[in-house]
Length: 457
Image (cartoon, rainbow, N blue to C red):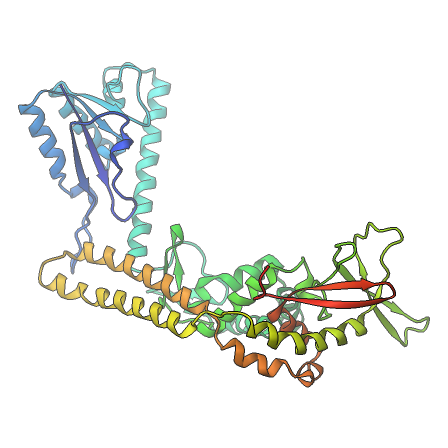
């Protein structure tokens, strides 16, 4: 006898399973798709949708001997308990057995079939019915969320701080958006999340945690985008608070800060987290010493975990800072000259061409719908996928360096450039180029070796 399988899938939620799902050889697979009717009228209930492949399965079972019908989940047979029961009754009248992969009874006769034959105790019967009802309700909720994704509507839940919900999506909240904007500007200026968090508490009495500040900086909503389940992102769905250039700069600063020791990104001194002792391989922290009346301050760099005996001595901070400026002015141009940098113009043109091709594909969907080649539901689903691909390409484009590195080096190789900066500003620029500073001890003397981000390991 034949063994066939029946699948009911929603293209918005999942893709069709492959042949290995069933675990053994199947003679034929019948598949129905959940396609909603749309247009000027209200969306029809999914209970009213015909299942042409199910009707074909029943017709084939009447003409060809069939032993078993396999389904992944019992709720795929219908959108309600009544619909599931009706289809099980059809199989029973044809003397065809049902095998449900996720809740397989011992006799492989089907869940509701067993219930109808009173083969289950009442407690187990009630539990199985409740589980199926919950699964059907969960599926309807996920289908509603999937329709919202295709229409680029916000996900469920409260709007992020700085926005409120409107009829067609997020709308900027004029009372709270300036707070968010000021937070972003502080981070862009100084490159430290903790500093921006402290600024909000002092300026607006808005107290947030550092982890909340991190989420604000990476939240796509503030860039005018929506991100859905699976990481799919749709761009330009509402008015942004951050521009694209500012967002790209924030992403770059966040990636840079991840390479630094904890709290070093917000430390007040420019060399914090960068200097390592080559003798004991320990990172060096900044120690602050004041006089009795605290009218003078002395700064030293000392190892945090030195295992040497005697321990490595502390080094004057200002002397290391001046040597670092001298070294960066001497070594940076030579390091850049010896590195083969990628052709950013060509890379940007390649990504731009791919975006243009995707956009042309998106523009072709409307004429195909008007010509009747595609229905509106299929076109909407395809448009959603293409917009997600465009978003990924634009994200790659935004992460590329915004300026020519060789041209920038000519400016930062001047000692006066570094001397005119404050410690906070100098900290920002040091982290743009320097990955690590090795302090090399030579008897009573010492020297520095700068390791740049673009230097070979």
